[in-house]
Length: 269
Image 1 (cartoon, rainbow, N blue to C red):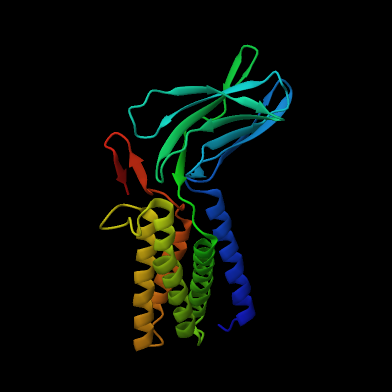
Image 2 (cartoon, rainbow, N blue to C red):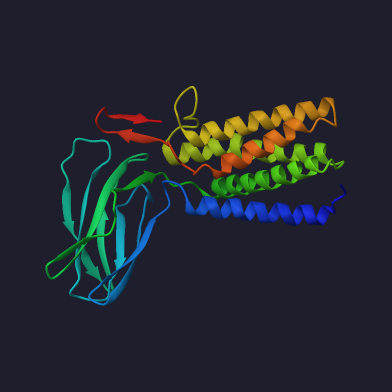
């Protein structure tokens, strides 16, 4: 079946945007969002789950009614700490509380409760867990993100090229491996080092899912490229590699990532 190259590129972009949108809405670092009505006011909230270390993390709720107050209860995640309760303060049209700064990979679990007359309304059903991380320079973070985006674009495009038995599978596979290597194996560990103090926290050193899934995808793509080098008609491994990388992107980012276990005093990776 002959398919126009432009159509395949359009399909590639659509699939990439869908994958990116899914990534943006999932994972343990995405804010907990919701809305609730109190005293006739609809309150939308966003409870953050990631913060750059070096400063306290501000929990902000937009509330215009001065009769509505709030408290935040928190304690370090994986610790024997007792719960600390702090009153939210009003800053303009916001109620604000600050969670104490933590070292990179340190986590705090917290609850937000809004109060009105005799009502106490907890916004979150489960404890929100926020992880602190080190600042990553844009000169490192931006190339990492761009290379990983190009990797998924060329992976999908290569898979489509192989699926429809078109002639450019081999060269497209090369682009995929190069971008995945630069984004995942070169800049990825540098980002990890800045954010959490270690270049690699996946197998066999740890259980970081982001490291492990990236390594798996790269290995399979290298196998696919080697098979293609030996036989340009060998498309099975290309299709396998395309599916694997797509599944890798669908696994929420930062799951099973670095964290400090305060019950032992060591970093869990």
